[in-house]
Image (cartoon, rainbow, N blue to C red):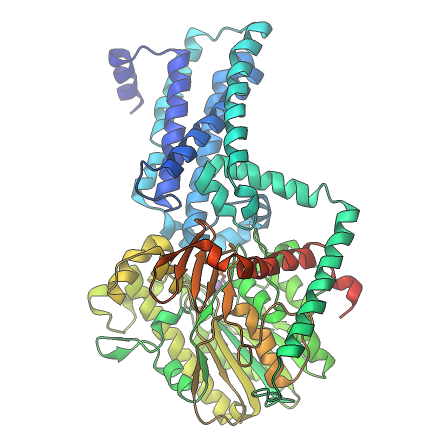
Length: 631
Ligand code: GP9
Ligand code: MN
């Protein structure tokens, strides 16, 4: 291979230092554009003003980095450029794959929460995200290495200091002026809750710079006066909110205290999206057991997931604290020592035993620490289960079937308890289920087909679990809550899902598809009811609080049964109500029913109030505010 490259160079190319640097810039730019468009961050029409600004910003940022490198390294400058090439390539490959799954860039907090054990657990998922066309990231490397060696053989002359200043620092200054002008003309500061907005508007490298700057400002350069100001904001927020809730409460509060003193059993279902519920394929229900459960339960069919960089752990956090997850990284890793007004802590104070159960490595997502912080008395993890049956996640994780079967034997059911069960089998990339016996017809062997089989398997385990609850007399003696943690189908797999649903892809319908089922069965409930209030995972705790009659003075969510409000605030600052869908990436407002594009001003007042919740939540978490309030 190397001799072929050599012949090619000798024959066609007059290799110079400038050519080497120009090629590096062009290749890197190409990789950046590949990132922007293959992740669908930027979209067609390619020749739009937005894309042109992103391109100019990307070129300028690159020129700043390159000229600075050339200035600093002098005689070793080409080695430095090649090293830079390698580093930027690694960053872009990591970003691409991370983005495909989490729809976010890798940021400093995310980077620090990655550890070898965690990565080896998800290696199958990571591998499934690579696409052949991603070789674009590395095709230039052999050429560049060859060119580097050849140029070094010829010798690299040192450039005198004054000349270096003029040559490189002047380019750097011009590029810097362009970057600063474009970024200050943009409105990225108003979108600090949306990591992707800066990447989409000003390019992936700028976004990394911007996120890092924000991180340093927030964590290193903390200012005490600011913290006091922020605390006051939080206090005011809850004062006003609780007053508003009292005023708007009607005399009759539905289901209030109907499960008071009963057990609470919450099941967080791995990657269970709402579109499989009630759906058939080749005449067979995908989730017959959940469908059956829904027939005598409350079914909330407009619930959106709100997870961010902590994925499953964020869903756990949302439902147990009614706070938002962080915009970057996982709160389980970053603020595991905080104090929280959590559901287990409240129930513990009411005399309940509290259990969390998840048959996986206890250190994953830092659960071992965080479940203690949340005040789960006992966390049963893979060390406590007999590994007698495997399913999903490359076939080496305990099956949900066995997990459910063993879990109920671990709980002392003679006393009131809260059990939080986290399932696992139906985990991305679902290829384990390819040979599973459930006919998915034309989707056989496809990503979506495998997911449907995974969901069908997970459903059958839930069916057995519900039967087990009935036979143990727990079904009518407990408040049962089931909900999905997050999406199963990342955007790169949208084609299969759209084909399955028989619709064309568009951002508007895609947003509506990011719903998860929420099912609540109260003790003795005989008849089902569908509640279509728009809500989200943050509403789970206040809703349960109403059924079980406990106070949640610091919950940011709402009681889905009694609220008059109907909205979901997503972690990226997008908002969905029963009237509108607002996209924070593009600042576009759509009519929820017709999909018509509307004037964003129609929604701006309500929007500010809702988005404010993200700010309040961030302040609470980053300043550990509840430590002073003592729950
Ligand atoms: C692992 C499980 C999966 O314990 O919760 O986490 P995810 O990859 O879905 O965030
Ligand atoms: Mn999950």
